[in-house]
Length: 470
Image (cartoon, rainbow, N blue to C red):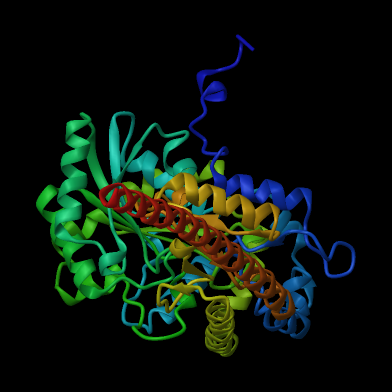
């Protein structure tokens, strides 16, 4: 053990978070409709499985792309040989066009400013290596994706300082919260290098307002720091308000030729919008050519395979397919989200109003035995071990208020979601009955004590009167 590195021995990976522990419990006892109908249902995984039929239909109609052929001729050898880390030009062009299409073509992207990475995890970590180091910090609004504790901190040595957001204004970022986080970092002798946000938000499932984006741009301009906008859920926005990319705000404010233009960077991925997390396709988009050059060199440690790039370049270049896929996927997400919300309502549970993402931010504060994170963990354990649902507690997302949970809805069948809601409803009913019985018992004991006290008081009064009469 003494021969291992400090990195191997440190515990900053975040694997002991309840977010990951829930996954581990699921893997020990996964639900299966036939083989294990009493197993744990996975509602802690933000995966989009609602549009596989669209992808499979395209593959069936385009056998050359799936078979690594061009005009009927095999290009397997060409794809199997070494490719440099700049990526296939045809794929980079198809990807930036797809990104623009999702944003309503209100902004365009230059292939010379994009870096391919093995998923958004790699993209975010690479940006940390480019922009910060040991003793530096990034500010993140709470609640935030639990994996950021691993992605941003573990290997880079960068610290995360939370921007404390609350339910009082639907967890939106405020100027006061930003400044307090900045001052907190300075008190810890940390140099703030930037702000990182997810838009749409994971775990809230909401899009950022233009006021929030303006606030962020003004803040990083004033502090001379960077902004990373993780926009991997941009194609999942299924209802108003519409998604607004930070690049659109920069353009509307005519900031193209200013210093802040180079300080804004976007992270993107095909894991959520296209439902392909296993393909490991991510990207960094930056207007700073030094960041692009450095990130490109670093991408050697996490490349996207040539075969994957070739297949997806053909798919994303098919504009009829991308248009249909974006539209149908958003409609399916809206329908599935509505089923989750209605199921929760039947169980007496509400959630934050959302318009994007693969999850809802669910309010279970009324089910806590006390307003503490200990009570939240107690409730979470009951839901995982007794109800057999893996959901993510708000504390794993660094939420400042106990009792909030992230619940995913797009990684399962409609029947499985229905079963999950039935289980949850039964659980809440049992809590209500037990709580009512407990309260009735307390009331009956209180009445008994009151009756005995009244009896003793009455007896004492009678005794006193009897003494007076004597």
